[in-house]
Length: 553
Ligand code: GLU
View 1 (cartoon, rainbow, N blue to C red):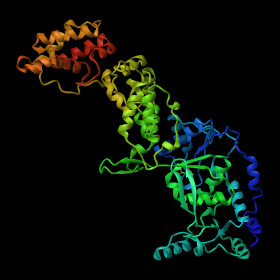
View 2 (tube, rainbow, N blue to C red; view 1 turned 30 degrees about the vertical axis):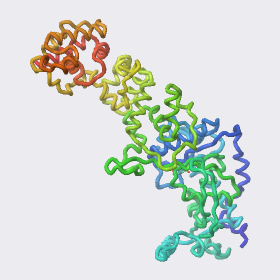
View 3 (cartoon, protein in one colour; view 1 turned 90 degrees about the vertical axis):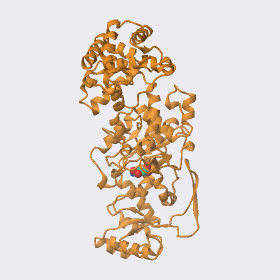
View 4 (cartoon, rainbow, N blue to C red; view 1 turned 120 degrees about the vertical axis):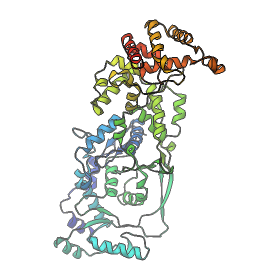
């Protein structure tokens, strides 16, 4: 077979050679040790936690080493394309603090290694396929779907390995004349790799995965499709050509690609190209709420797989980042304890500390991490964050959107200083619930009054409270007035006195202050009453007390 002639027959319009592209996309001029990583999402419109998880690894590897992180859109599958999906990818990742240095952009692409949409790279792929045909490493295959289905059925019946290989690769050795006449007859063809492997040869190869360490796998023996009949490459071929030409040093991708690694290694070798460093990340897992069994996060069952979920609930991006690092690197939490105030980017992320057996995702843990992270964010920034969140996701919350920002900041800041700060805040939706009572629009009596206090005392306690109420009182003075007032009405000044002699008292000062707390906040649990009063202001305090007394006459 004259492969040169065959290559020209299959690709008459391809005039360039791989060497031309090697010249167009030379090695990047980066410092030694700098890593080039990429995210290669398909534009399906759905961006999930797994994407962010992977993107975070890419971003850290590149930016920690002074390298480049770029975005390549893997849009070779027309059926999955969704309008506006690229904007969603870029803006969602940006929201969580992941930005690209290069690649597909919102307005235009940037960088010297494009095009960054695979759909615009047809000629490049075909140039490399043409070279493989020329070298006798690839061949056209005209088999119809039905023929392939027959082969599959036979293989299933005979319990053979499925696929097109060995004697099943029927068009491997077609003559030039046969190929030419089929093409002249308008027959469609795909191009397959002419694998140099054989099943059960016992030959293996070894790669060093940056997360999993040394991996030894059997060689590929499948004549995998590299170019589809429409001239578009398969994932396998596009990955090899793109990651080579875009000079990716580290390929971070999900472990679902591990089984295809033998194909990729054979393709890199066939083209004489250097392998990138592979980093196969573990699947995101969760403990199923119902069964208690660990399982993969699923798009259908788990709303928390979507990144939109976190934005809509109002998780602060810093909290999500911090949480992802706790999942990504086993030594992160230890580092955080030793460096409570440090910027997260000071943590040295490494692939070696990544789990390879399934990264466990736990929303309760995220909430806990979030409590700590929010504590480090100044209240005025949190106030901005809350207002932005409401503007975007809950525009009906006009009371929050239009409120005085300083007021909101003091509401959010309550109890956050001191040696034992309160950790009440997790995410915007929950924070809103937590602070709602400050706003008249949402104020309501949510909790029951304490059982120890007889109903006829409710209004009476509040009336006495108002009589001596002085907004300028210090916290200590305020409390001693409450205590004295309670004592005068038969409530122990200290809970322990009441415990010792329950028959001597109606209740204790805590019960009295709970009545005041409910009058003020509608709740039996809240941050410090005195502090809340200082934020609400004298008029509002008096108004709420009167309203309560009226309702409990
Ligand atoms: N387009 C592939 C995917 O969405 C990218 C895999 C890779 O990063 O190589 O799974």
